[in-house]
Length: 126
Image 1 (cartoon, helix red, strand yellow):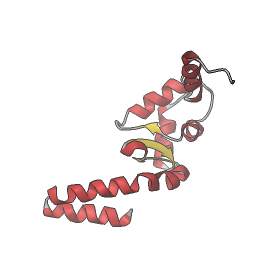
Image 2 (tube, one colour; image 1 turned 45 degrees about the vertical axis):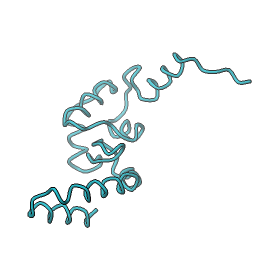
Image 3 (tube, one colour; image 1 turned 180 degrees about the horizontal axis):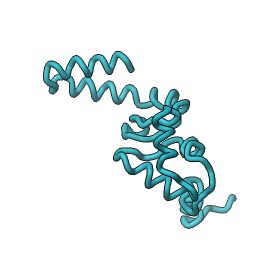
Image 4 (spheres, one colour; image 1 turned 90 degrees about the vertical axis):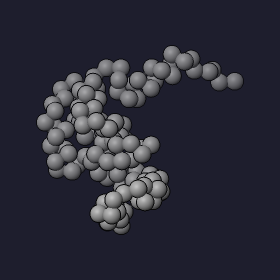
């Protein structure tokens, strides 16, 4: 019978995979690709998350990646806002699209008339 991993080993493995056990030397875009997504509910969270993981993180590096759209800030995993590589977003978005559209349908009757049109335009554009 295979040896069962201890809780400590599982914990350390997760920290290693998430690059949280020690800072690494790699570009921010590569780390985001490695992680698939970085929490970005609040605008400063990804900066803290990347600073915690990267040895030479520069905030302007992330700003540039967002400005040139190499990295996107969008609703993805668990219907929350994350940073993700633009190429990864192409396969991530369809996984949350049904839930987002269902939520939009639920909220549509609650919106003011002018807001309904904006929501419908966003839904069609998606």
